[in-house]
Every structure is written in structure tokens, then in C-alpha cells.
Image (tube, rainbow, N blue to C red; front, side, top):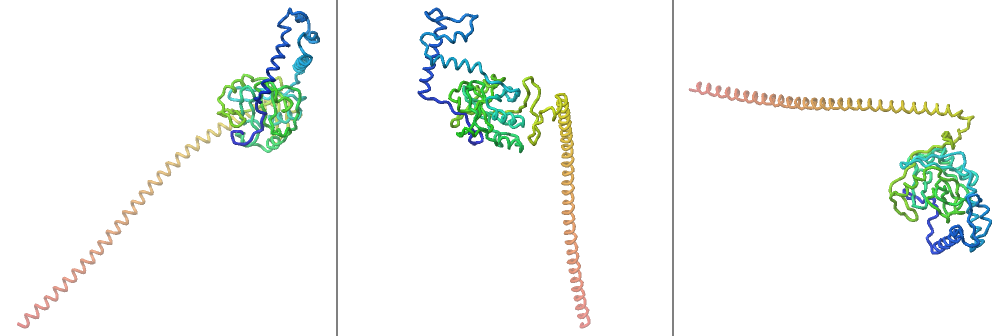
Length: 375
């Protein structure tokens, strides 16, 4: 499974069986028998090759003690080495934190798979993707192009191309260090966009997985990846830290930029569509200048927004102070109104009391006058 928990297309795990060990021992014995004539040199019936004698002439002679089957395997190995697949003109450059890895494809060996993966690279499908599996001495596997493995959002053209399934294109090209091998599920025709970069010889993958290219530069980067700390999840050995593919671009074998693709997925790399390389470089320079100007404008807008935020904060503080002052004035007004009401009430009470006293005094005077008259 990948880091997101989804089941990933895989390259077959290492076989560790007694038959495989016995087979390795048998191959070692055969190799020793094949090498014995050249090591012995002066043994009867065995002739060492001279510097001027071609190896093909010596291969026709049968050394003593070597079977026909061993000679056939030797001849097949020599033939495979001499018939190395022809590389296409495109070179894919993958930028990682540990260095650049450059890929080339075998259009004659696996034309459908090579064209599919190349188009995904041209579309930028592997940008912000990652290498989710690093099994030392076996494979470093690039994750499938989807919304879970990429940091950036997929465009409709990228989604459409990444969803395509490519048929199996098995060949006699061996799985050796640097080989590009298409990932798949149990169905041989289920490959989509995940692929592996071989970290060693994997004979059990031959004729079982599609070989479509090789690493032409960056084997030292693969060696660095093999030194990273890993963890095991099921059959997968995965790095503890994410290995991002920061960016990718496509050139020809001379380093000239190729692979322009429009957002709609149209290939714009032809001369009729994009003009010569000078015009392309000029357009790229204008684009870079526009991006730099846009970044400068954004920084300026950010500074202005910060200043506006400070002014807004200052205005908000002043408004809060004014609100507090108004609230205090209102409280003081309410207190003053209460005092006035109390004073008026006290005044009425005093006036009533005065009236009562005057009435009492008047009554008292009337009574005194009445007493005097009686006397």
C-alpha cells in the first residue's frame, strides 16, 4: 500500500525459495565451468584468446567439460548484450531532493507503454508526485499519478491520460539495474502510471513485466535512495520520509527542450505549433519576467494590506475608546438624573413638612385667641 493507504500497482516481490537458491548454486557452478578454460590457459585442448583474435571465433569452439546448454546460455547472454534496445530521442529529467534522474525509453520494445508514460511526463503528471517504495537491491517505485499521491491538483487532461490502461508488452530485455519496468496488478494489462526503476538484477520479472526504458543518468541518486531509512508495509519496503518528485521536464538527447503540451492535452512540441527554439526560449523568458513581476506586485500588495490592517486596528482601538467614553458619560448622566430626582423629592417633602408646621402653628394661635376671649 502507498502512504495514503491505497493498494498500489506493484512489481513482483523478491522470491526467496529453496529452488531459487539451488538454481543460483547451479548457475554459479556453470559459470565456473565456463570460466575454467580461460583461467587454465595452458590446459590441454583449451586455447586462450589472443588480443587480435575476435571473441566470436573463440565462441565457435567448444571448451572441454562444458555442455551444449551452457554454451547456448553464454551465446544468448552475449547476443542480448550486443542487441541492446535502441533509445528514443526524448530524455525525461526528474528533479528530486537527492539529485536529478534522467530517463530514456525503448519505443521499439514497448511503443504503447513508452508513449503513454512520455505523454504523462509532458503533461506534467508526475510533478509533485513521489517515490513511494525503495527496496534496496530490488526496485525504487514511482507512485501512480492520481489525486492522492500528487500534491498538486490534476488537470482534466492529466486525469484522462493517467486513467488509461496499457497492454502488456513483454520482451527479452532483462530486468537489470537502471531498467524501467511498468507496474501493474494481477492482470498483465492493468498498468496505468506507476513504474519501477530497478536497483539490481531481477530475473524473476523477465517476461512478466513490461520493460520500456532505462535510467541514463542518476544511478548515483538511486544509490542515495537505497541508503534512506525504510519501513515494511506488507510486501512493500517504503521510505520513512516522503521522496518528492519536485518537477520534471523533457528534452532531446542534446538537451533541447521538448514536450510542450497545452492544458487541453494537445502536443505543441512540433515546429509548426511553437516555432523554433529561440522563440520558445524568448517566450519562456517573458513568462519568467511576468512571474517575477507578479511576485513583486503580490509582495507590494501584501505590504499594503499589512499597513491597512494596522490602520484598521488603530481605528478600531479609537472606536473602542470613544465607546467607553460615551458609556461613562451616559452613566454619569444617569447618576446626575437620579440625584436631581432625589433632590426634587426631598424638596417636596420639606415643603409638605413646612405646610404641616404652618398649619399646626395657625391652629395653635387660633386656640390661644379663643382662650383669651373666654377669660
